[in-house]
Image (cartoon, rainbow, N blue to C red; front, side, top):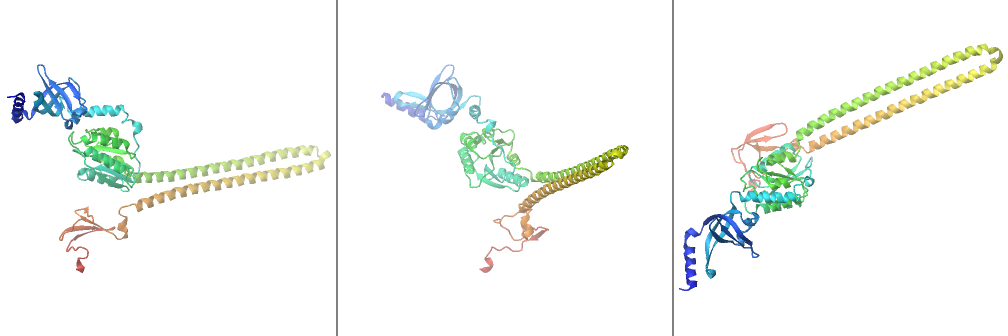
Length: 445
């Protein structure tokens, strides 16, 4: 037979042998070449033998992520192929793993080190979370316990906020691309979001891998909305936890991080109001006390001044009696003049001090009244705001909530005859049994 016929026979024999179709081989990499075509060529060797290998470009992405080097020990899976033109046997590899280390863990560590060196985890990039969010976005699956737990936690702690769900595929092929797209969508949403929660429930290392992929990480890095990463459970740490502005150990904890506790705020407002009233009362009492002391001091000064001058006048009169024989008329005029000036001075000073005291008391009273009115108006405004935003407020206007098994019914849920329902009004709750249900418009047909 010809050489070509021989080679064709060998190829047919190898292709037909099942033992060569799914071969697992362990060895060291050598002669590793990444061809411009996208294919990868290398050899596997051990202490005594070598075999040539190649990977088609459709299977090389995983190998590239492992950053292989010559001498690295690997496990490969492939099939034996015989190349007719050169009469050469090679191993066509379609999967590769690093011996002794999970390839995902290697990719994780390499990517983590790379992003850290590029400053992706710097604290200076972390955006602060808002204290009182009005609109919260959630990127997660639209089914399962995560979104239910988040809605329950957020509405319990801060019922004044709106929740917007951006449903995403959170595991499997294409999950990271979908998560990244939903983060971008949330950033361009018609309603401005105050905070964005990105995550999923627990799972295996592979299940959580979408939160280690670059499409997810780039979207988190470029988000102008503060992002809380909530992936898996407490021990699970993904790269999205490092890139995000805040990491929550669980999705439920993310709901608590994103919202304040309305009950704590109410108690704080009550405490601040009480403290403010006490402070105002104390300031008022202190000012009144100070004013009383100052007034008494002024009165005492006036008395002392008057007494001192009266004593001085008495001495002058005694002296004047000694020389009255010579200067009686002149001294009498001076004494009368001095007495008049002195009394006028005392009268003016007393009037000035009285006017000053009255003005200070009036000004202080006005300040205290304005300050009290300002804080009372603020408190009334805050109380009115809380009342208007109370989700049970419509019940005051005659509306009612219908519950089944203590769960509020939505407008599209079906009610069957014979079911027991609870009707919740503002002032009571009624239990009733459905006798008959009709769709709107049936009575006209």
